[in-house]
Amino acid sequence: MDKNCPNCGAPYDVALDKCPYCSTSYFDMSAMDINNQQPFYLKLRYGDKIFTSKVIAEPHIDINYCKDTVEALNLKNNRIKTVIKRNDVDVDIKFHSVLDDKGNLFTMRYEND
Image (tube, rainbow, N blue to C red; front, side, top):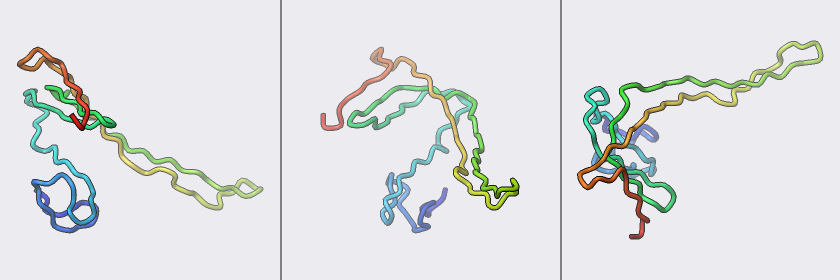
């Protein structure tokens, strides 16, 4: 397990959810074995609400590399410069809600509740 912030490189406490030095949020999902199809609880902040659901991760992850460029051309249509507008990777994981022990698919509560 990495013991350094992926953003600033400073050491951090793996029990925290933010780097104590640069405040970068991180969440290590390597404990979740997608292939075993075992349900687990997913908790997300959505605005001022907290969404909680018992879920199963779909055993397929889409990883898409995205690069978007713009080219500057002179009057003879010769390329002068290429500017990269976007250069990143999209990672898509799907979670399917299942009934929890109380028969709920999810709960939503306000953060201050």
